[in-house]
Length: 423
Image: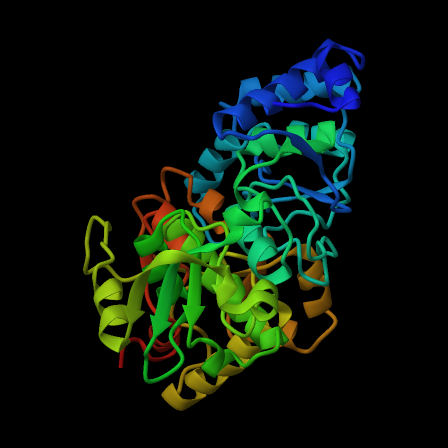
């Protein structure tokens, strides 16, 4: 790898032994993937995926403390993935006790994050790119991120450039200010390996469509044709919300870091089919294919016929408009069924920034009235509690389904379960 004089000096120890190790790690990482050079991180803010103080992550805390002690702090302020725990989420006394042990280093870890350069108290979210948070990269910005749903959104919807890094590599990129140039940072790496032809009779569920594409293309780049017929050709708030959930499913059910939506996402609008590689494979998706994919999801509850004990909505975190929309649908469904409160304990998860905005509206009181809790947590990490792994939890998030024992239902099915008790 060819390094600039500044980069070589860092590698040779000009900024100390610890910073030299940071640079050496990045160089070795890049060389594995054939990177010929390093490029500067140009985004205003970074994003850190490691947000949880798991008791057994001692080596990570030691590493972070070494960086702090040696003055190897992030060159940019950063946001961070959601906190793993909230005492207000329904749980037993035993589950609370286990969670207190599992995440016993949370307080210490958050102090480290403050020293390393986290933006502030409201910076814990997987949807850092929303207006309420403000970590919204510009097209062409080079990032050092790892959170899969944020990376795929930044690459695809915003046109920024970032590889799917690990939690430590992303921090090292922010600390050094450079990342290896390969993969989704390059023009060639951003071209599509697949053409996805959408031939459904109605707008597909974002989670199921994303899941189907992710499982088919894996880490490749898909170019999706036909979705603009439902989302339009402008990135409205509605379109961006759909793509948030769609992208998270492609990234978790596969390993997609970038997708292009014909006539909608920035690079697809600017370059069109020039983005498609010669000989790209074709995947046709119709109603039957989506139904096949959904029916293939396993249920790993101990008792497949168990009544759900908890419902999580918001993985990735919900937008304010999603919360408002769900509030209205739940109210209408409950009224039609003659019920006053949701029939399954339900938690909406969102960022603290959105939560503050929500509390300024009547929707907060309306949700409380129908029994819905709004929390800032990461439901995925909350369910890392071994006692929750044996509990029947439902969700409409394909990411949460993939990484936990939660059972997937479509939004319409969730609405029916919460309001009509399956009637």
